[in-house]
Image 1 (cartoon, rainbow, N blue to C red):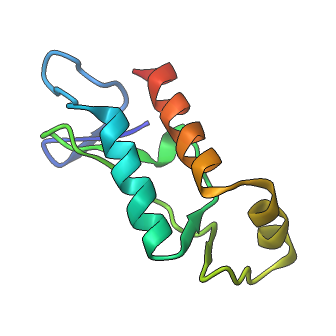
Image 2 (image 1 turned 180 degrees about the vertical axis):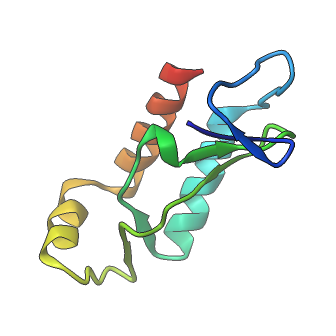
Length: 100
């Protein structure tokens, strides 16, 4: 995954150095903010989840998104139909739980 620690990317989360508080609530907050802004994030994978040295979770790589319910390609239109906001949030959280 994309872990940010002391400003550098590292390949593994060092659990005793980075404490992640309430990851479920953090993913819910990310989900609600994206939904409120009408951004459907369609690239839920491990390498797009970041964690900073304070344990804050964020997402990167917003190339595969639908904004304002207007897909700009047929591929995005198909992905948009495939996932709801909640399904994407749940998928991201499951990916996170599997890898930490």
